[in-house]
Image (cartoon, rainbow, N blue to C red; front, side, top):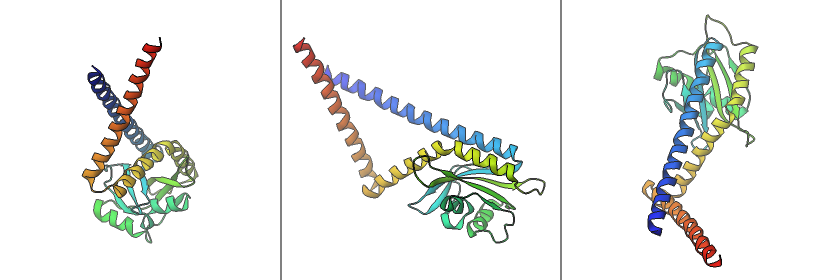
Length: 218
């Protein structure tokens, strides 16, 4: 009887965690896509993107962007405008891309998209004294330059993206920490699963023990 209860509770817990994780990922994805679509239209820009900083790889990777899949772009942090905004913590505007970072040239060759001007805002962590991502707008239409109104709006959006970006950043840090200390991958999975199962079974044991004790005391 106890074994059946433990099995059912474990099954329900696993389903709940899966649904919760999936729901969070879907919400984050939809929210980021919404901001990208809206901001491209409101600022009259050709493209909009959100980058996440990976300090372990010293790179920035695309979380969401106009016409690109997640992680469709990953470039060295010091060779990209998004990376410069993240490291400096300052908004960056580039009107002339002649002397642009080398990563911009690489992306241009990869995608065929020619960048004329850029507005990039760091997304600062609400829990750490640093930026964990960047919000970027490319090519103001009709040969226009990004103005103060665009800057203010982009910086406001970056504030709204802080929690989502920070969660993605922290998830990345946890995964890389586990991978770094418990490689190879097969061992990672077995250790994590074993730990979760042991903790869960111990909690069930305490719950059952307290219930039985209450019955005798009563």
